[in-house]
Length: 514
Image (tube, rainbow, N blue to C red):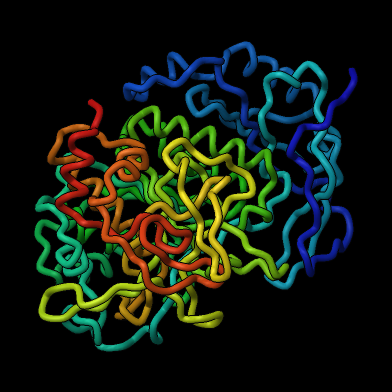
């Protein structure tokens, strides 16, 4: 059987990494094989999860062919899900090397060690038309959380003000969020590390006077679980920031945290698990993790975007942090980058501002940019995605020039993210003030949950509606994120701007699809 190279599967060693030798052939290994969906145009009307699975689930014959392929190569099928379009394979490193034509290596990197590979993945020709991606063979971390501490954890937990940090509800009030509590909605949070303690959540929400306390639960994906590290500077801060902002804004919504390993396979599996969850049924998903587009394989980008397109077809709004490292996105090659999955045209990409308040009103707002050390709003132009229809005709302003936007522009919207004007949270028993675009994604998710609850149906992909109604946003025309300049209208620092809550609600309610 002639083998073919899976397009977009090529891997290179990251800068600063070196192979220490072959991975132990007896070590256990897992990989997620993403299959192509049934051909068909996604409908304009939102589908239920069940209807989507029936119409667009992967073909049973493709799953059967992959099962036969795996069995012949000493691999087992740990899980197969036609709706999610994925098959999880388990086995030993030696079997995966043989099955996919790779040579898995033990790799050392300044950030840690991982199992890596170089070159493409190979498959037999009979799977050419059915396999979209093979993820997880290389288990390097693919994403980082987008939060920033203003000051060390442990400061006294005080009332909401700019000195002590904003109560998320005061930010919602400043932005004119419509009344509501998100009752009947579910907000899904994707987390790739860390965890939460119920004692912290109970203390935090009780301190805000929220009663009853928000319902928080978790789903384990690929063996990851709620595992707080005890380090308030680590991933626990991301998890708690997401829960506490979403819970404060939409306290009657059910909050479900999907924990997964920080690999391309784990990240995708968490996302598809949340999208196709027929038990919890999140109507909004918030993602505060990502990495520069250049760090992803194209097969992973294509697989993620297909999953996000499915979410849009089912009326699920996905809010994604645009990154905390300005126009370079912390890639050290000296050029501009945007963060993925924020760059997908099927998500609401969320940038960051610096918000100043006085006497219960907004006194000023500009692009968040504290420099290289302090962080800045992510944003720029995608190198992977074509310009979506709702961005046609826009200009992009760099610090030295203005020209036509020709590819997907990031972000779409923004909100308060500067840690100097950050949010008061509680993590690992300590009070802290935290910012970053990680705070913006759950803030927007909470707003959408309120709107969905008031309308009684899901808003879904809201980007086209917002780009047609700039009055739903507060335009930010001051500041830069490095190489991109804020300007009147959309820009690659803060998108269309921060929320004008009541107007946004009117726009989204009018455009919501049952």
